[in-house]
Image (tube, rainbow, N blue to C red; front, side, top):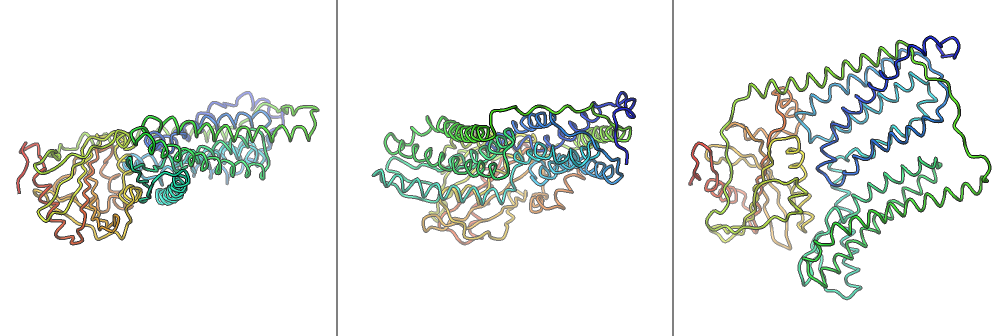
Length: 530
């Protein structure tokens, strides 16, 4: 056992280099935050994530002032643990650059950074330090995006329940309204109960605030649980009021009036949730202080200067070198492949084909999808089946693949009132020799079958590689992207929905002909005709 008595270790204290520890921890957390940054930027549900690292540092600083005295033991097991978390964290950037939309990497990065920090604290200050600083470190998990399947399931449930409650409120107020999925049809138009109105955003922000206030006031386990429950209740009730108010406004003044008040109502509900939590926490703190008596306030315990052994400092320096190599090597790997890459034939889809009618895409939808280029059109085939066609394109950049992953038929169309019957076998449609892989879904829309085709293509895919997206999201596909040094490609989304068609072969041929007539290649510069 090697403790740090103040007299015997005074020379060691003088030689301590705390900046090495600080730099190693900051580098570890920077790698983790870097993998979450775009999710915070693109997905409005997680925009509060930018605030969480600052709150973590504030909570850590509060804990630092009354930290226990060091009782460190230089145990080989914890040195190995620090090294293991560090090496695992250093490997993630290589995979992340090729797969920035894969939330598993962000989750792993957060857990590795937390494990690295806690193991380092154990090495420096002993088990008492781990317990003392545990909450400020683990608090970061509140900013980690949920797995998409869980997020979609919870979001869908909240939107559904909120829509039902709003519909009942409209009926109680004497307004005519009818529910279609997560849409409410009014005589003046249709109002969507979107994810921002479902309680998800303010719910997550409220839970974050509940944990933060509980730590600031050092509440017990039960009191913190009450705050979390209050955050859940306030967020859902607030969003019910918001959605009800906007729906009543749409009934009285028309759907166009909703756009004017939509964002302001959201901010008001967020303020309502945060203000309610703060009032509850402050009220409980005052009652607790009154019970304990207004005697002597809790002071800050004097602790000796932190001492760092040479082994700990060498470990921190080794991790800094490893982290820099990881970031520099990752960048060099992908830049090398980008220089060697050849320019592929570019193509696009033209709008305004004869027989089509433009369907405007709302500005709010474009903002939610991070401002893609593109258009939406409707047309009728030769058997009088109605089709709606979407073509969206995101320019090259890390945000492209993350933004396109937000748009998924199972989420978007279900929110629009359609019911998923089943996902059909994937279809490969060749357009002018270029294969395009489509996922195919069968929905029902107010008793009518809707066949939906959905394809995501990366810029620069060579002819004959279109089917690569069939396994792009498998582990093998993601590893192949790493080996080939593929990152930050622009993304294209092609989506088509056909009403009253259940014959997939017939729909395939109709879609193929439409794409053939609208596809433009740079080498031809003219639409290819069937």
